[in-house]
Image (cartoon, rainbow, N blue to C red; front, side, top):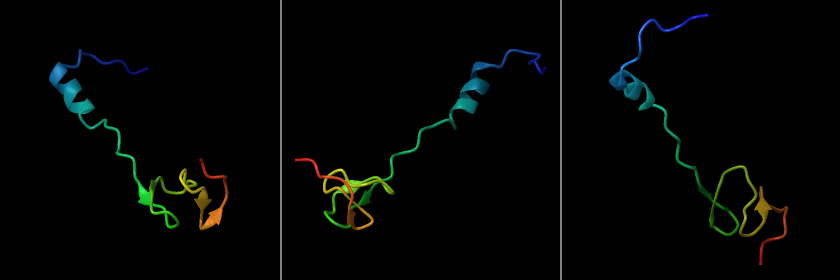
Length: 59
């Protein structure tokens, strides 16, 4: 099993971790009600997906 020969310095560790980021959530507008929603998911406002009513909209 590979084992590091030397301790990795703080600057090297932080430089490596600087690329480890979360991506922002992508939002698109619902074609039915124009509210922002995540793609490929039923709209939580009007309950439509692919221009069809799939869930009962919340009150």
